[in-house]
Image (cartoon, rainbow, N blue to C red; front, side, top):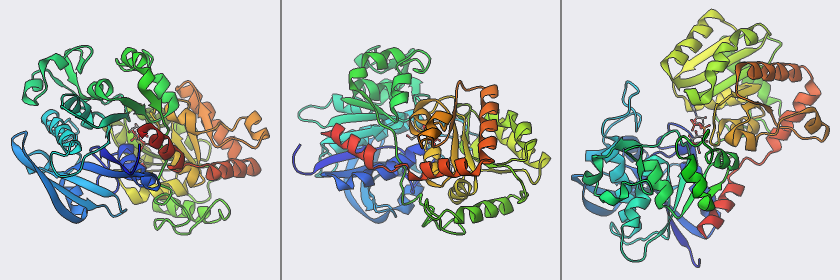
Length: 479
Ligand code: ADP
Ligand code: GLC
């Protein structure tokens, strides 16, 4: 490719404008990391009120008439982190507050199907230069919400952009009834096994996989896991068949947003070389949750969606073990009501030992990362995972299940690894209660051996968890 290539990023959330999980982190960081290459990245987002409010110097650049029964205005501006954002302002589609996919009761919003089909249609039209004078060379769409983009583009005539589709989580497939097809302007023939049909439904995710030139997912191990019956969630056979176009690239994190040396949420700055400030962060976290500062064990931290994927029911079950060993636990999360209740009950039953905050709190996430000794990520599956990367950056030791991106990004501090100066965390496998208990025991015993603990922590803090390497990999894919 010559000159500056134009990439249209398409996704439904983007840090710091709107975020429910790691997808937003990637959408908000990878385009910035690509700035050092010969590409111009424009990020297309739905015009949710939060996004429109956060956009600076917004200017109208184009329109698209009659998309799902209304006109769309394209507004271009920048986010507070300097990212170029294109917003699809369409009040008939996106004018609601709160979670972009779920209603107040935690149920899927009723019109997600037509809404995200329209979003993909907008993306396909913008990419072809139909909204304003700008054409994409590559469209990079993310997850089911943007899955139909490549399907619409496959129907376009003439020269069209190449398409990359990234699977962030195979568990969310965007399944909708067949009857939606005609109303979103897709032809009947696409509703086949080789197309977007999945058990007699339309799968937006499968459309992204089938119709894109290249498919990526967010770690090499997850790329392998999803080609199996066990990890493929019904799409294993298809992904295996298409593995010539499937790539696994592990995520990074934004090392400016996540930097303990300049983090305004922390009481004192610290770094790998001057780690003393981490003690102050632990003290502050203990104070905030009323935890006993005299505890002799490690402080375990959790920052997570509370869902089956994340395996936190195992942590709830292991609580007596943590409490009985003079360790402590802080949980920041929201999701499954039973799990929320379990962690709230634990905090009540064990004051001074367990602290729980149910909700979403960006500042607190930074404080838990810094104030914990260990970050727990016992996921049953994990496409990449970002909290273990933040943990390493913040000198907290990740204790993780050996699955997906957790397997790829954490090096188990086994005796052999330590002998060679390696080891950034603790892994356990398979994902089960007994294995978690053994891993917690390992963490608690390593914590008492200060020299080893300091070594593992230093290894983690020195690890390159930035976007530099993944951005290079995406750049060569675009080429
Ligand atoms: P997933 O995307 O599956 O939820 P990731 O580990 O990739 O998991 O990303 C989760 C992101 O969301 C991280 O940036 C993490 O800090 C953040 N996060 C998760 N839960 C909370 C919460 N309750 N409050 C603040 N941030 C949270
Ligand atoms: C998904 C996955 C998570 C990944 C994130 C960003 O939400 O569950 O593992 O880190 O996307 O790619």
